[in-house]
Amino acid sequence: MLLNDEEKAIAEGAQGEAARMCIEQQIEVGDFFGAERFVPVSNVHMMGDYEVMGNAGQSFLQRLLDAGGKVRVGTSRNAQCVEYEYSQRLRQSVELVSHEKDVRKLLGALGIWTVDTCIGYQTLYVPRFGEHIAWGDTGTVAYANSVLGARTNYESGPAAIASAITGRTPAYGFHLDEVRRPTARIVLEAPLDDVADWGALGGIIGDRVRDYWSVPAIVLAPGVRGPSPDELKHLGAALASHGSLAMFHLVGVTPEARSERELGTKPLRDEFSVTRADLESFYERTTPADPAVRLVVFSAPQLSLSEIETIADAFAGRRIAEDMTVLITTNAMVKAAAASTGIEGRIAATGAMLLQGTCWYIMDPAEMQRQFGWTRVVTNSAKLANIIKAHGYEPILRPTQVCVDAAVTGAVR
Amino acid sequence: MSERIFTCERALGPATEATVLVSMRTFSPRYDLDRENGIFSRSDHPLQGQRIAGTILVSPGVQGGIAGGWAFMMMRGRGVGFAGLVFGKVNPVMVQGAAAAGIPILAGVDPAIFEVLRNGDHVRLEPAARRVVVLPGPSYG
Image: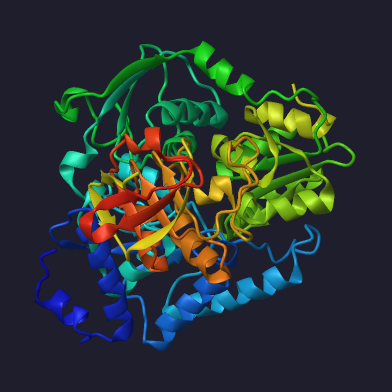
């Protein structure tokens, strides 16, 4: 990589040992990907809690702090693994809660905002078109690149912190124009009605176009309406989860695809359609042999206020079944809004739990399975349905109303 | 029997030698592993139940995301992690995570390697030369 004078000085330790350690690792990664230079970043979003980093990560943070580490741009933290208010009810271990509090202190000392959210782009910081950022959490990256037109690669926890401390990131991948052009064209022929439908679309495309360096361009067939911001959120999260994709275009909707002509002429590697039958088949993959369920989760990504209100409406005054657990996750900002608007009270009246600052799949769901005996989980999140198999669960992906009905009746259809 | 060499497009990290785990599935630490104990835990994964400590993973690609950035460091700290990684296609997180954990990663490997390698084969990773050397052993011949 070519370094400017400031970057050379950082590499020589002029801005402290922590910055030197960080830029050394960034140069190693930049060289790997053939980056020619660094690009300054104006905002960082990092993933880092005890569940994902363990003692080794905690020690890494302490080393940075001891070496004088301090972030130099606004840096937010992704969802954390603990819900302090509900930790006992959800039987989260005392050790996990204690470790997480220690991690939180370390992050705070580094200057990181421990806002614990994976939907900061809906509630906290919205980068402008063309802005270079360094974000972690795959769904946030897909949303930033695709919907906002900002520029970021997937940044792991340590890499995001490095960017926050040096104020820059190697210029490769989605920081470059040529990588952002579409490599596949998909025609959506089915009208979609729910966030789960858009997540399923992301799952179908991600399973087929499975490569970080691929960029699908989705074309809406005549009569198919475009998605809401929450539906775009689920589309991006599922594309990232199933396909490791960091960007998509939706022609006529996303800012770098106002028309197909604007997308350029890069040769396409794939071209196909998605029909209602494809979507039904995707749902069918998670149809259980036994319809009895005891757990319904709305999470991954955290929910916006309108998503929570949709769930409250779907309950229509009903309560969850006996021996049923319903978990809804969001961030502190949305939860405060839910409280002030009365939506939180409507959720509480159903018997569901509204958790803040976390996402269920990072709350040690394998331990919850041992504690509560849960085997299946019903969800409207295609991302969660994909992830949760690693923790021994049988996922059942369904539209929001079907999930709510399962919560009320104890059976999924 | 002699060594067989497969080239890669990109690489970083120190040279190392170990036995391999070959997975034809795209890989994600969060989706596939019990990261506390270093075991493939995904219910429908062909390697389910396999311990990964000290092995080199060879896989055509990756999926999902960001957790890999901490996962390799965490598992190495617990003594249950991979000794190295070889991929066809790769995303930045795997590379950033390997760099942070101090383990070698090679990407863009010659796809012919998947026709040759079997679980338990012994290989040497040479990142500086961007190559994987398959060493003579019982299953490779």
